[in-house]
Length: 393
Image 1 (cartoon, rainbow, N blue to C red):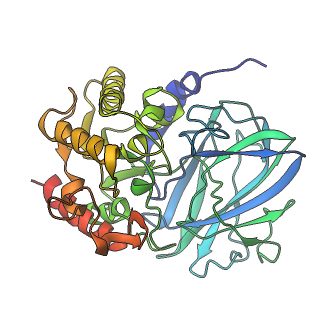
Image 2 (cartoon, helix red, strand yellow):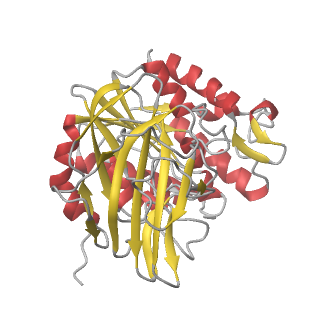
């Protein structure tokens, strides 16, 4: 079968995105891929809070590629294509407020693809749904449900991490089921479109491009208390916020110029917060990490010379030994001589770090647990407050 790079599809398709704003701050970046020994049919239902409710027109965009590398890349690597799979049915619905696995009767609206209820998906392909009209009451979630079928082998890219939203899944075809009796709670399994948009023109798209710390991992499920979500609340719906933070992601994933970076390229302003996993599991030197960040900035500028790029310092992650030295060298370089093309640097490390000489360590009150330096919801509040003040200067 003929293979295509994701860019081959996106260049024309992404023009449609200009008519829509990003509907949710939940990241659906893909960092893993389904791999089964046998054929399967499965249904997934996810509840997400939209930035605005009421009478809205939604569209869903899909990307059949892995965005970033998981662990050491034995299963999923940044830029890897998904397999062949079939969307058997998809629905958008009023998710209510209970998140109990069901949806209100008569609220489900079919999601179609060129008028068809089904869609065969090819490796590396990107594509749009048709527009979906909904009237979502205030403070109600959107529920997205779809049934996916595939043969054996690798198929659907998805996000695996601690769940930041409530989701359910069921064996078999249950996309049209409203009661939710067949569904069980999902764990570490977020199977969603790559982007959810609603028709809204004239907003500036800010793309937050980072790892699990950007994604919001280890904050409360359905709490929307991570710093990207809080920044979005602070700026209001007049700003289009797209969170493509991805657990275990690293700068060298993005520097490969694949599907993940092509998502970032859709921003008018791109905010890059990478480096923790490069230093940690990626075992990159300071020079390699800074080189990858420079490559990312260069590629973004080549795509759009007018794009505004904000770079974050690398968050403290309780590194020791050589990793601590790399973290210090990288942050010193970012503060004093960031890559050409960067307009400003936001010093997130200064917000989260302990006082010197322990600035490589996260403040204890910001730890998600005694042993886990992922920032918690309190840290999200601190970062968003500092960022909003800095951003508006």
